[in-house]
Length: 211
Image (cartoon, rainbow, N blue to C red; front, side):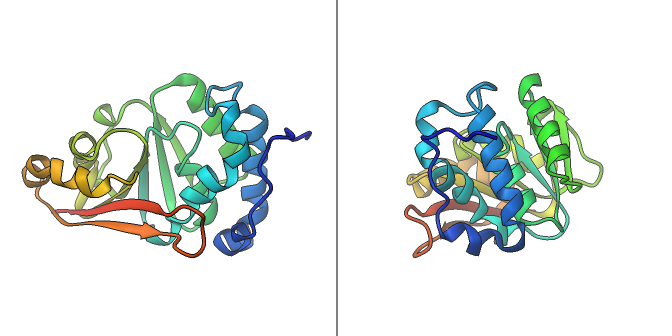
């Protein structure tokens, strides 16, 4: 496979974050670099920061994943769902994506990378259902926290958890979501900054428990 010249060199942190699954992460990153623009998953300007801004930005969340069944809403390119499935092969991931072309990408990558812990569902979060609910649910760059709560909370079992990747305004998003937090009886709503001293830019995650 001929990789684009613009592709960012693999940061040294990748080996620490992925450990024994680094080779799988390398293959996925290469596949995304070569085919991502064709599938409409990433733009050409993302290649010089594909590892740092996208792959490692997602993978640093892996320690927050718990054994069980984790949903990824609006999985798109597989960020974070496929990346987390690579980093945590003992956790089962359900990737929820409405667009047919992206669903094909996700299924093809799960097969090529032998990710037996991945299931892909085509549809919107509001339209899918789970027997017994998910143990956790995640999303990256989908919608504001206030809008994600009614999409995600109904899919999670009582006592399950939202683990939502957000930007620098995560704290303000929590403040703006007060009504939805009360409506869906969320507790322990917190912002976590991950990757300090490991990544150039920290990853911010909002976690909340669903009662």
